[in-house]
Length: 442
Ligand code: ARG
Image 1: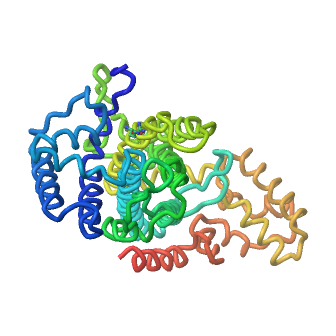
Image 2: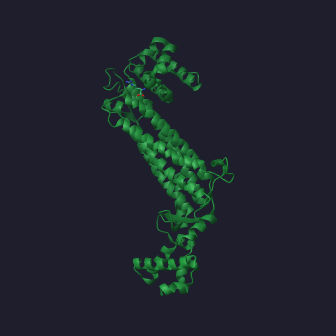
Image 3: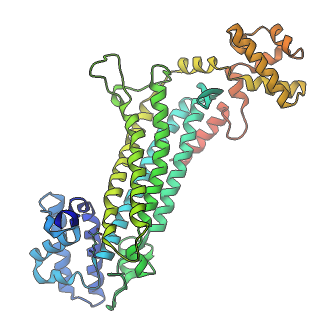
Protein backbone atom coordinates (compact mmCIF):
# COMPACT_ATOMS: atom_id res chain seq x y z
CA UNK A 1 0.00 0.00 0.00
CA UNK A 2 2.76 2.41 0.95
CA UNK A 3 4.54 1.74 -2.31
CA UNK A 4 1.55 2.70 -4.45
CA UNK A 5 0.08 5.34 -2.16
CA UNK A 6 3.01 7.50 -1.14
CA UNK A 7 3.71 10.61 -3.20
CA UNK A 8 6.39 12.19 -1.02
CA UNK A 9 9.20 11.14 -3.38
CA UNK A 10 7.93 13.62 -5.92
CA UNK A 11 5.54 16.00 -4.16
CA UNK A 12 8.30 17.22 -1.87
CA UNK A 13 8.81 19.68 -4.69
CA UNK A 14 5.65 21.38 -3.43
CA UNK A 15 7.17 22.07 0.00
CA UNK A 16 7.62 25.81 -0.58
CA UNK A 17 4.07 26.24 -1.83
CA UNK A 18 2.68 24.07 0.98
CA UNK A 19 4.40 26.20 3.60
CA UNK A 20 3.16 29.41 2.00
CA UNK A 21 -0.40 28.07 1.90
CA UNK A 22 -0.23 26.97 5.52
CA UNK A 23 1.10 30.32 6.68
CA UNK A 24 -1.68 32.18 4.90
CA UNK A 25 -4.26 29.80 6.34
CA UNK A 26 -2.93 30.07 9.90
CA UNK A 27 -2.91 33.86 9.83
CA UNK A 28 -6.45 33.94 8.50
CA UNK A 29 -7.67 31.44 11.14
CA UNK A 30 -6.29 33.73 13.86
CA UNK A 31 -7.63 36.96 12.42
CA UNK A 32 -11.08 35.36 12.12
CA UNK A 33 -10.87 34.21 15.77
CA UNK A 34 -11.03 30.54 14.75
CA UNK A 35 -7.73 29.77 16.51
CA UNK A 36 -5.91 31.87 19.13
CA UNK A 37 -3.18 34.28 18.16
CA UNK A 38 -0.77 32.34 20.40
CA UNK A 39 -1.44 29.13 18.53
CA UNK A 40 -1.06 30.92 15.19
CA UNK A 41 2.26 32.40 16.31
CA UNK A 42 3.53 28.99 17.37
CA UNK A 43 2.39 27.51 14.06
CA UNK A 44 4.09 30.24 12.03
CA UNK A 45 7.30 29.88 13.99
CA UNK A 46 7.26 26.12 13.51
CA UNK A 47 6.65 26.53 9.77
CA UNK A 48 9.61 28.91 9.56
CA UNK A 49 11.77 26.34 11.25
CA UNK A 50 10.63 23.67 8.80
CA UNK A 51 11.38 25.97 5.92
CA UNK A 52 14.94 26.36 7.17
CA UNK A 53 15.32 22.61 7.69
CA UNK A 54 14.19 21.93 4.13
CA UNK A 55 16.38 24.68 2.67
CA UNK A 56 19.41 23.31 4.52
CA UNK A 57 18.62 19.72 3.60
CA UNK A 58 18.07 18.54 7.18
CA UNK A 59 14.38 17.74 6.86
CA UNK A 60 13.72 14.04 6.78
CA UNK A 61 10.94 13.18 4.35
CA UNK A 62 9.19 9.99 5.43
CA UNK A 63 7.39 7.66 3.10
CA UNK A 64 5.16 6.30 5.83
CA UNK A 65 3.81 9.85 6.12
CA UNK A 66 2.61 9.56 2.54
CA UNK A 67 2.85 13.08 1.12
CA UNK A 68 4.28 16.56 1.63
CA UNK A 69 1.23 17.80 3.54
CA UNK A 70 1.37 15.07 6.21
CA UNK A 71 5.16 15.22 6.41
CA UNK A 72 5.09 18.91 7.21
CA UNK A 73 2.18 18.58 9.63
CA UNK A 74 3.90 15.75 11.49
CA UNK A 75 7.12 17.71 11.82
CA UNK A 76 5.15 20.72 13.02
CA UNK A 77 3.64 18.59 15.78
CA UNK A 78 7.12 17.45 16.82
CA UNK A 79 8.24 21.05 16.98
CA UNK A 80 5.30 22.80 18.64
CA UNK A 81 3.11 20.08 20.13
CA UNK A 82 -0.70 19.97 20.05
CA UNK A 83 -1.18 23.47 18.57
CA UNK A 84 -0.01 21.94 15.28
CA UNK A 85 -3.27 20.03 15.13
CA UNK A 86 -5.22 23.30 14.89
CA UNK A 87 -3.66 24.25 11.56
CA UNK A 88 -5.85 21.80 9.70
CA UNK A 89 -9.09 23.45 10.95
CA UNK A 90 -11.39 24.41 8.06
CA UNK A 91 -9.05 22.85 5.53
CA UNK A 92 -8.46 19.49 3.87
CA UNK A 93 -5.61 18.03 1.89
CA UNK A 94 -7.91 18.35 -1.10
CA UNK A 95 -7.98 22.15 -1.18
CA UNK A 96 -4.43 22.19 0.16
CA UNK A 97 -2.94 20.19 -2.71
CA UNK A 98 -5.02 22.08 -5.27
CA UNK A 99 -3.65 25.35 -3.88
CA UNK A 100 -0.03 24.18 -3.68
CA UNK A 101 -0.10 22.82 -7.20
CA UNK A 102 -1.68 25.95 -8.65
CA UNK A 103 1.03 28.04 -7.04
CA UNK A 104 3.69 25.73 -8.49
CA UNK A 105 2.24 25.76 -12.01
CA UNK A 106 1.84 29.54 -11.87
CA UNK A 107 5.58 29.79 -11.26
CA UNK A 108 6.27 27.32 -14.05
CA UNK A 109 4.32 29.56 -16.44
CA UNK A 110 6.41 32.54 -15.38
CA UNK A 111 9.62 30.54 -15.90
CA UNK A 112 8.49 29.43 -19.35
CA UNK A 113 7.75 33.03 -20.23
CA UNK A 114 11.20 34.15 -19.13
CA UNK A 115 12.87 31.27 -20.98
CA UNK A 116 10.97 32.05 -24.18
CA UNK A 117 11.90 35.70 -23.84
CA UNK A 118 15.59 34.75 -23.69
CA UNK A 119 15.28 32.61 -26.84
CA UNK A 120 13.50 35.46 -28.61
CA UNK A 121 16.28 37.88 -27.69
CA UNK A 122 18.93 35.53 -29.04
CA UNK A 123 16.99 35.14 -32.30
CA UNK A 124 16.49 38.88 -32.70
CA UNK A 125 20.23 39.42 -32.18
CA UNK A 126 20.95 36.97 -35.02
CA UNK A 127 18.30 38.62 -37.18
CA UNK A 128 19.90 42.02 -36.63
CA UNK A 129 23.25 40.66 -37.81
CA UNK A 130 21.79 38.78 -40.76
CA UNK A 131 19.03 40.96 -42.15
CA UNK A 132 20.53 40.49 -45.61
CA UNK A 133 22.24 37.12 -45.37
CA UNK A 134 20.65 35.04 -48.10
CA UNK A 135 19.70 31.40 -47.79
CA UNK A 136 17.24 29.27 -49.70
CA UNK A 137 13.68 29.30 -48.43
CA UNK A 138 12.19 25.83 -48.71
CA UNK A 139 8.78 24.35 -49.33
CA UNK A 140 8.51 20.55 -49.43
CA UNK A 141 12.18 20.70 -48.39
CA UNK A 142 12.89 21.83 -51.98
CA UNK A 143 14.54 25.16 -52.69
CA UNK A 144 11.68 27.58 -53.32
CA UNK A 145 12.66 31.27 -53.15
CA UNK A 146 15.61 33.07 -51.61
CA UNK A 147 14.95 34.54 -48.18
CA UNK A 148 17.12 36.16 -45.56
CA UNK A 149 18.42 34.43 -42.47
CA UNK A 150 17.14 37.32 -40.38
CA UNK A 151 13.64 36.77 -41.73
CA UNK A 152 13.91 33.09 -40.92
CA UNK A 153 14.99 33.81 -37.33
CA UNK A 154 12.12 36.26 -36.87
CA UNK A 155 9.61 33.61 -37.93
CA UNK A 156 10.48 31.78 -34.72
CA UNK A 157 10.33 35.00 -32.70
CA UNK A 158 6.68 35.27 -33.78
CA UNK A 159 5.94 31.66 -32.77
CA UNK A 160 7.55 32.12 -29.37
CA UNK A 161 5.58 35.33 -28.86
CA UNK A 162 2.34 33.39 -29.30
CA UNK A 163 3.64 30.74 -26.92
CA UNK A 164 4.26 33.42 -24.33
CA UNK A 165 0.73 34.65 -24.91
CA UNK A 166 -0.61 31.17 -24.19
CA UNK A 167 1.33 30.88 -20.92
CA UNK A 168 0.18 34.39 -19.98
CA UNK A 169 -3.48 33.56 -20.66
CA UNK A 170 -3.22 30.31 -18.73
CA UNK A 171 -1.56 32.05 -15.81
CA UNK A 172 -4.33 34.62 -15.62
CA UNK A 173 -7.07 32.01 -15.76
CA UNK A 174 -5.50 29.77 -13.12
CA UNK A 175 -4.93 32.63 -10.70
CA UNK A 176 -7.87 31.89 -8.41
CA UNK A 177 -7.55 30.30 -5.02
CA UNK A 178 -9.00 26.88 -4.14
CA UNK A 179 -8.03 27.32 -0.47
CA UNK A 180 -11.03 27.16 1.83
CA UNK A 181 -13.01 24.80 -0.39
CA UNK A 182 -12.00 22.26 2.28
CA UNK A 183 -12.71 18.62 1.45
CA UNK A 184 -15.25 19.50 -1.24
CA UNK A 185 -18.25 21.34 0.18
CA UNK A 186 -16.79 24.37 1.95
CA UNK A 187 -16.75 24.70 5.73
CA UNK A 188 -18.95 25.80 8.60
CA UNK A 189 -16.10 27.85 10.12
CA UNK A 190 -16.23 31.61 9.43
CA UNK A 191 -13.16 31.67 7.20
CA UNK A 192 -12.12 34.55 4.96
CA UNK A 193 -11.20 33.09 1.60
CA UNK A 194 -10.59 36.47 0.02
CA UNK A 195 -7.90 37.10 2.59
CA UNK A 196 -5.95 33.90 1.95
CA UNK A 197 -6.38 34.36 -1.79
CA UNK A 198 -4.87 37.83 -1.57
CA UNK A 199 -2.05 36.70 0.69
CA UNK A 200 -1.05 34.06 -1.87
CA UNK A 201 -1.18 36.46 -4.81
CA UNK A 202 -4.39 35.06 -6.29
CA UNK A 203 -6.90 37.45 -7.85
CA UNK A 204 -9.89 35.94 -6.02
CA UNK A 205 -11.13 32.75 -4.38
CA UNK A 206 -12.66 30.13 -6.71
CA UNK A 207 -16.43 30.43 -6.67
CA UNK A 208 -17.37 26.76 -6.42
CA UNK A 209 -15.87 24.44 -3.81
CA UNK A 210 -16.51 21.28 -5.86
CA UNK A 211 -14.73 22.76 -8.83
CA UNK A 212 -11.94 24.09 -6.61
CA UNK A 213 -10.86 20.66 -5.39
CA UNK A 214 -11.39 18.77 -8.63
CA UNK A 215 -10.13 21.13 -11.33
CA UNK A 216 -6.82 20.30 -12.95
CA UNK A 217 -7.39 22.09 -16.22
CA UNK A 218 -4.84 24.67 -15.08
CA UNK A 219 -2.21 21.93 -15.24
CA UNK A 220 -3.54 20.76 -18.59
CA UNK A 221 -3.38 24.29 -19.92
CA UNK A 222 0.21 24.57 -18.80
CA UNK A 223 1.01 21.27 -20.49
CA UNK A 224 -0.79 22.21 -23.66
CA UNK A 225 1.01 25.56 -23.90
CA UNK A 226 4.23 23.69 -23.12
CA UNK A 227 3.51 21.11 -25.83
CA UNK A 228 2.96 23.78 -28.46
CA UNK A 229 6.09 25.66 -27.37
CA UNK A 230 8.03 22.40 -27.44
CA UNK A 231 6.77 21.76 -30.96
CA UNK A 232 8.17 25.12 -32.02
CA UNK A 233 11.45 24.45 -30.23
CA UNK A 234 11.61 21.08 -31.91
CA UNK A 235 11.15 22.54 -35.38
CA UNK A 236 13.97 24.99 -34.75
CA UNK A 237 16.08 22.19 -33.28
CA UNK A 238 15.44 20.09 -36.38
CA UNK A 239 16.57 22.96 -38.59
CA UNK A 240 19.72 23.38 -36.53
CA UNK A 241 20.46 19.66 -36.91
CA UNK A 242 20.00 19.94 -40.67
CA UNK A 243 21.89 23.21 -41.01
CA UNK A 244 24.81 21.94 -38.94
CA UNK A 245 25.12 18.73 -40.96
CA UNK A 246 28.08 18.75 -43.36
CA UNK A 247 25.74 18.26 -46.32
CA UNK A 248 24.10 21.61 -45.60
CA UNK A 249 26.86 23.37 -43.72
CA UNK A 250 24.64 26.43 -43.21
CA UNK A 251 25.71 26.96 -39.61
CA UNK A 252 28.53 26.04 -37.32
CA UNK A 253 27.94 25.22 -33.66
CA UNK A 254 30.86 25.54 -31.28
CA UNK A 255 32.14 22.78 -29.02
CA UNK A 256 29.93 24.26 -26.31
CA UNK A 257 26.82 22.69 -27.87
CA UNK A 258 28.20 19.70 -29.73
CA UNK A 259 29.98 16.48 -28.84
CA UNK A 260 32.59 14.40 -30.57
CA UNK A 261 32.17 10.79 -31.53
CA UNK A 262 34.04 8.13 -29.59
CA UNK A 263 35.29 6.48 -32.80
CA UNK A 264 34.92 9.01 -35.63
CA UNK A 265 37.29 11.89 -34.98
CA UNK A 266 35.81 14.17 -37.66
CA UNK A 267 32.37 14.36 -36.06
CA UNK A 268 30.76 17.25 -34.27
CA UNK A 269 27.32 16.08 -33.28
CA UNK A 270 24.53 18.55 -32.47
CA UNK A 271 23.40 16.62 -29.38
CA UNK A 272 21.82 19.58 -27.64
CA UNK A 273 19.58 20.30 -30.63
CA UNK A 274 18.67 16.64 -30.92
CA UNK A 275 17.71 16.47 -27.27
CA UNK A 276 15.59 19.62 -27.52
CA UNK A 277 13.86 17.99 -30.49
CA UNK A 278 13.30 14.82 -28.46
CA UNK A 279 12.05 16.44 -25.24
CA UNK A 280 8.89 17.31 -27.14
CA UNK A 281 7.89 13.68 -26.79
CA UNK A 282 8.10 13.82 -23.03
CA UNK A 283 6.19 17.11 -22.83
CA UNK A 284 3.38 16.13 -25.16
CA UNK A 285 3.36 12.73 -23.43
CA UNK A 286 2.70 14.49 -20.13
CA UNK A 287 -0.27 16.30 -21.64
CA UNK A 288 -1.72 13.10 -23.07
CA UNK A 289 -1.04 11.29 -19.79
CA UNK A 290 -2.75 13.82 -17.56
CA UNK A 291 -5.74 14.37 -19.81
CA UNK A 292 -6.23 10.62 -19.82
CA UNK A 293 -6.06 10.56 -16.01
CA UNK A 294 -8.65 13.32 -15.74
CA UNK A 295 -11.10 12.48 -18.45
CA UNK A 296 -13.32 9.97 -16.64
CA UNK A 297 -13.19 11.29 -13.09
CA UNK A 298 -16.50 11.90 -11.38
CA UNK A 299 -16.51 14.94 -9.09
CA UNK A 300 -14.80 15.64 -6.85
CA UNK A 301 -11.36 14.52 -5.62
CA UNK A 302 -10.05 11.03 -6.32
CA UNK A 303 -6.57 9.72 -5.69
CA UNK A 304 -6.12 9.43 -9.43
CA UNK A 305 -5.34 13.13 -9.27
CA UNK A 306 -2.15 12.48 -7.36
CA UNK A 307 -0.78 11.42 -10.77
CA UNK A 308 -0.96 15.03 -11.95
CA UNK A 309 2.34 16.10 -10.43
CA UNK A 310 5.02 13.93 -12.00
CA UNK A 311 3.71 14.69 -15.47
CA UNK A 312 3.90 18.42 -14.87
CA UNK A 313 7.25 18.32 -13.06
CA UNK A 314 8.85 16.25 -15.76
CA UNK A 315 7.43 18.39 -18.57
CA UNK A 316 8.44 21.61 -16.81
CA UNK A 317 11.98 20.38 -16.22
CA UNK A 318 12.24 19.38 -19.87
CA UNK A 319 10.84 22.68 -21.09
CA UNK A 320 13.05 24.81 -18.84
CA UNK A 321 16.11 22.90 -19.97
CA UNK A 322 15.14 23.02 -23.64
CA UNK A 323 14.65 26.77 -23.47
CA UNK A 324 18.01 27.32 -21.80
CA UNK A 325 19.75 25.07 -24.34
CA UNK A 326 18.01 26.75 -27.26
CA UNK A 327 18.87 30.28 -26.10
CA UNK A 328 22.48 29.14 -25.81
CA UNK A 329 22.56 27.44 -29.20
CA UNK A 330 20.96 30.31 -31.07
CA UNK A 331 23.50 32.69 -29.58
CA UNK A 332 26.31 30.27 -30.37
CA UNK A 333 25.55 29.36 -33.97
CA UNK A 334 27.50 30.99 -36.74
CA UNK A 335 25.94 31.14 -40.19
CA UNK A 336 28.11 30.24 -43.15
CA UNK A 337 27.03 32.77 -45.78
CA UNK A 338 28.83 31.04 -48.65
CA UNK A 339 27.24 27.68 -48.02
CA UNK A 340 23.80 29.26 -47.73
CA UNK A 341 24.35 31.14 -50.95
CA UNK A 342 25.57 28.11 -52.89
CA UNK A 343 22.50 26.18 -51.81
CA UNK A 344 20.24 29.03 -52.86
CA UNK A 345 21.89 29.34 -56.27
CA UNK A 346 21.59 25.64 -56.93
CA UNK A 347 17.84 25.57 -56.92
CA UNK A 348 16.69 28.20 -59.51
CA UNK A 349 14.95 30.05 -56.70
CA UNK A 350 14.37 33.20 -58.77
CA UNK A 351 12.14 31.49 -61.33
CA UNK A 352 9.15 33.17 -59.69
CA UNK A 353 10.83 36.55 -60.14
CA UNK A 354 11.13 35.86 -63.86
CA UNK A 355 7.46 34.89 -64.05
CA UNK A 356 6.51 38.05 -62.12
CA UNK A 357 8.58 40.12 -64.59
CA UNK A 358 6.70 38.60 -67.54
CA UNK A 359 3.43 39.51 -65.85
CA UNK A 360 4.52 43.04 -65.03
CA UNK A 361 6.34 44.00 -68.22
CA UNK A 362 4.73 41.84 -70.93
CA UNK A 363 1.27 41.79 -69.33
CA UNK A 364 1.16 38.00 -69.51
CA UNK A 365 -1.43 36.18 -67.41
CA UNK A 366 0.42 34.63 -64.44
CA UNK A 367 -0.34 31.05 -65.52
CA UNK A 368 1.26 31.59 -68.92
CA UNK A 369 4.21 33.41 -67.36
CA UNK A 370 4.67 30.47 -64.99
CA UNK A 371 4.80 28.13 -67.98
CA UNK A 372 7.37 30.27 -69.84
CA UNK A 373 9.59 30.64 -66.79
CA UNK A 374 9.40 26.87 -66.29
CA UNK A 375 10.63 26.28 -69.86
CA UNK A 376 13.51 28.73 -69.31
CA UNK A 377 14.52 26.99 -66.07
CA UNK A 378 14.51 23.71 -67.97
CA UNK A 379 16.83 25.18 -70.58
CA UNK A 380 19.18 26.57 -67.91
CA UNK A 381 19.17 23.18 -66.20
CA UNK A 382 20.08 21.44 -69.47
CA UNK A 383 22.87 23.96 -70.00
CA UNK A 384 23.99 23.49 -66.39
CA UNK A 385 23.97 27.22 -65.59
CA UNK A 386 22.24 29.55 -63.16
CA UNK A 387 19.22 31.41 -64.49
CA UNK A 388 20.97 34.77 -64.70
CA UNK A 389 23.86 33.13 -66.60
CA UNK A 390 21.65 31.79 -69.40
CA UNK A 391 22.29 33.81 -72.60
CA UNK A 392 19.49 36.25 -73.39
CA UNK A 393 19.17 34.79 -76.87
CA UNK A 394 18.33 31.39 -75.39
CA UNK A 395 15.57 32.96 -73.33
CA UNK A 396 14.24 34.83 -76.32
CA UNK A 397 13.90 31.56 -78.21
CA UNK A 398 11.29 30.67 -75.63
CA UNK A 399 9.78 34.14 -75.18
CA UNK A 400 10.81 36.75 -77.78
CA UNK A 401 9.51 39.60 -75.61
CA UNK A 402 12.18 39.11 -72.96
CA UNK A 403 14.70 41.97 -72.80
CA UNK A 404 17.97 42.29 -70.93
CA UNK A 405 16.09 44.17 -68.19
CA UNK A 406 14.63 40.82 -67.22
CA UNK A 407 18.09 39.61 -66.23
CA UNK A 408 18.14 42.28 -63.55
CA UNK A 409 15.47 40.54 -61.50
CA UNK A 410 17.18 37.16 -61.56
CA UNK A 411 19.91 37.66 -58.97
CA UNK A 412 19.34 36.47 -55.41
CA UNK A 413 19.81 40.02 -54.10
CA UNK A 414 17.31 41.50 -56.52
CA UNK A 415 14.84 38.81 -55.55
CA UNK A 416 14.99 39.32 -51.78
CA UNK A 417 15.16 43.12 -52.10
CA UNK A 418 12.02 43.09 -54.22
CA UNK A 419 9.91 41.33 -51.59
CA UNK A 420 8.95 44.48 -49.74
CA UNK A 421 5.33 43.61 -49.00
CA UNK A 422 4.48 43.81 -45.30
CA UNK A 423 5.84 40.68 -43.63
CA UNK A 424 8.08 39.98 -46.63
CA UNK A 425 11.74 38.97 -46.64
CA UNK A 426 13.26 42.21 -48.03
CA UNK A 427 16.17 43.31 -45.80
CA UNK A 428 14.45 46.68 -45.25
CA UNK A 429 11.36 44.88 -43.93
CA UNK A 430 13.49 42.57 -41.79
CA UNK A 431 15.23 45.58 -40.24
CA UNK A 432 11.86 47.14 -39.47
CA UNK A 433 10.81 43.96 -37.69
CA UNK A 434 14.11 43.70 -35.84
CA UNK A 435 13.51 47.23 -34.53
CA UNK A 436 9.94 46.30 -33.56
CA UNK A 437 11.09 43.27 -31.57
CA UNK A 438 14.07 44.99 -29.99
CA UNK A 439 11.68 47.58 -28.58
CA UNK A 440 9.10 45.01 -27.53
CA UNK A 441 11.55 42.64 -25.83
CA UNK A 442 13.38 45.34 -23.89
N1 ARG B 1 -1.07 13.48 -2.04
C1 ARG B 1 -2.40 13.80 -2.41
C2 ARG B 1 -2.45 14.24 -3.87
O1 ARG B 1 -1.45 14.55 -4.37
C3 ARG B 1 -2.96 14.89 -1.54
C4 ARG B 1 -4.44 14.93 -1.44
C5 ARG B 1 -4.91 13.74 -0.69
N2 ARG B 1 -6.29 13.84 -0.36
C6 ARG B 1 -6.94 12.79 0.05
N3 ARG B 1 -8.18 12.95 0.31
N4 ARG B 1 -6.41 11.60 0.13
O2 ARG B 1 -3.48 14.25 -4.50
